[in-house]
Image (cartoon, rainbow, N blue to C red; front, side):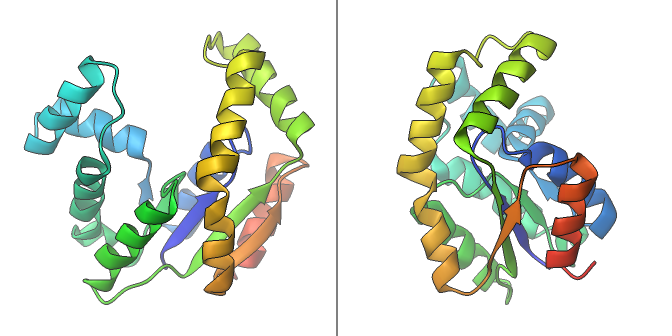
Length: 187
C-alpha cells in the first residue's frame, strides 16, 4: 500500500506518520530525513543536495525525486511506502505517479489531516515554546500556511478527482486521530 499524508504545517503529519509507519509496517519517506541520510552517507545525490543546502537554497525536485526513486526501488519498499509531507505540489505528485507507475504501482490512499487554522497556529506556537524552535513565530506561521494554501492545497483536488483522498479529522487526541487513520486504511 502506498500512502501519502497531506496536511498543513502543524496538522500532525510527523506524529501520525511515525505511528502509522510502525502500525502498518510501511517505510516512511520524509524528504528531510532522506536528505540528511544521503548527505551523511556521502552519496552522489547527497553531495548535490549539500551544495544547495550550504547556500540556503531549496533542494531541486530532481534531487528529491532521485532520492525517492532510490527508496521506491529498495526491497524494503516492495510492499508500499508512507510519504510524509511529500509531494507538496501537483508537478511533484505527477512525478511520484510516474515513479510508481514505472514499478507497476500507484498511490492507494491520500490522507488529508484537516485542522482549523486557529488550532494550527496554537499548535505551532506551542511547539516553538516547548522545542525552542525559532522558525515558528506568528509571522513565519502565517507565511507557511499561505505557502501551503498556494502550493500544496491544490493537491487536495488532484487526489480527490482520482478517488484516493480521505479526509481525516485532525483535532482530538493523538490516539483518536490515529484511529481515524487506521479506519481509513482498514488496519
